[in-house]
Image (cartoon, rainbow, N blue to C red; front, top):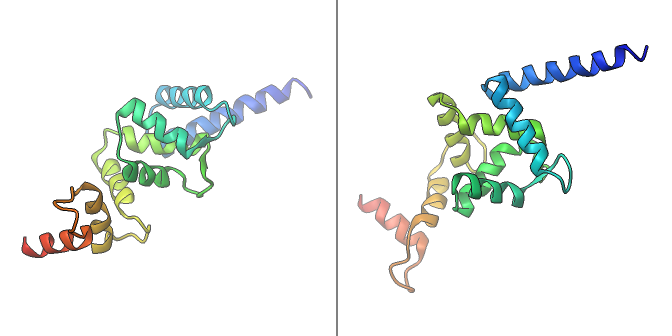
Length: 154
């Protein structure tokens, strides 16, 4: 019976790898690289990537520096809202992030901008995004009012 156990383990591993390839739309070699990278960088705690570590990795690897963007990108990766990513979530998320397929990239962008996850990008959600990109013209101006007045005048 002990000779069957490694086969079952290898078989499960291969099935898991195939599933991740389908779910991430990435080839096997890229999925393996992502798995290896995830396992290399998630040592404390092992197998879990906390939000802070995700943000640091994305900043270092892709020079993403916007806190609001990073938090919302993380939210799209952390599908079960655990507060950390497991390897499968990381691979699926990076599959969307790294994809050459335009429809996959559009879907990820939509998910990032859909702050409440209701399937729509509302005016309020757009205003939230604009708040982060506007520079206050004076200390007396209210950012919300500045955004609303500039969107009305356009």
